[in-house]
Image 1: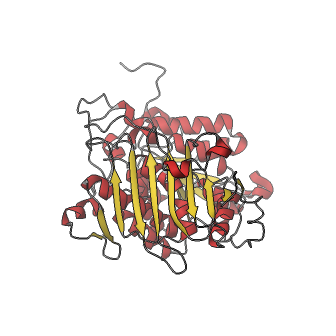
Image 2 (image 1 turned 45 degrees about the horizontal axis):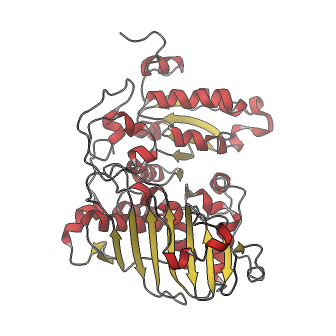
Image 3 (image 1 turned 90 degrees about the vertical axis):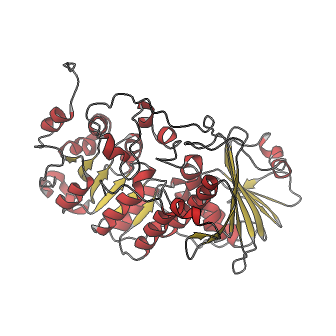
Length: 464
């Protein structure tokens, strides 16, 4: 028997005045008189595709717009998000109670014609598919990382965005920081000289790679588990899959571990600053057999050819409890930091080094012969460098302003797709268990036809 205090999906939707899951209803548009100078016509009509933990974390950055509709396959998440908005986000949050509720994104996109833009935070397995569906429906898109779950997805979403006038933005918030963009300017101005080696790392770790647990837990009421799995295989339900990106993201059917999750941040600054393009060779080292989950520690390597006036470069990604740059570079950090930071991105150039956090922010520089690092805005060698990149009022605000006709976003899918592709090619090498020579134009691992299913990852089409 159901506990009397428990809210079911049916009673929850009835409370909101929705006839049923995915009901077709008119969007919430109030009169200008009700809002004064901030009339909805001056706000962006937004739909949320997924309402879980990450959606609630970023909601304060766009709740001041007009949230027309929300969608999730888990009724409990919708309930929690609207409750949080009502109780903690003031009048704008309270207005979300009028948003229409859906459990199928396809019905939302078909019915809510007033929606101009969508915010997506549904998990890696879904991000590219939801983003492409929204773009094809004529909506601007903000999507949390990781953007793609295969090389082909990364290429498709990049090409679709590049051919569209719609505004896109990936959730790599560090790229909105002043120091991220200043670090790009400093390196591209040649302050460090030719940069031939980059190490990105984070000391997060998972348990050793394991097989999927086939002993299913009871599926919670109000959760459409088949739809949650979506384009991927329907695994036996486990409660821990609902624990956020560090829970489902460990399992290769749903995500690609730390490389996809934090690599979306860590690989962003190297790819942007050094104009890396596609790698020629990719390899990875792990210390345990690969099963159905991401390993406890990895060391990925991408080798890039010379590009214009940029030197050939090797990029590394390290994760696990001992993650960090090699000893000869790590010792350069000790006079400033006493120990190697738990995360970072270290650029080694002919004239010196630049270190940022794993999100690409808080860049510091040390030239040859100097003992300690100094900020990219403070070091005398950086001060003459011209400001060539736009600055922003905030990561989400930049996207909102772009949707309303402002300057294009700095981190749209046209570049984010390439960064995602970099990580996904790394995952092909991991899952094959061997280095690959990458042929970017044809999306092929040279001489390895067994890589093709990993590059393309055929989806289940039931929910697409």
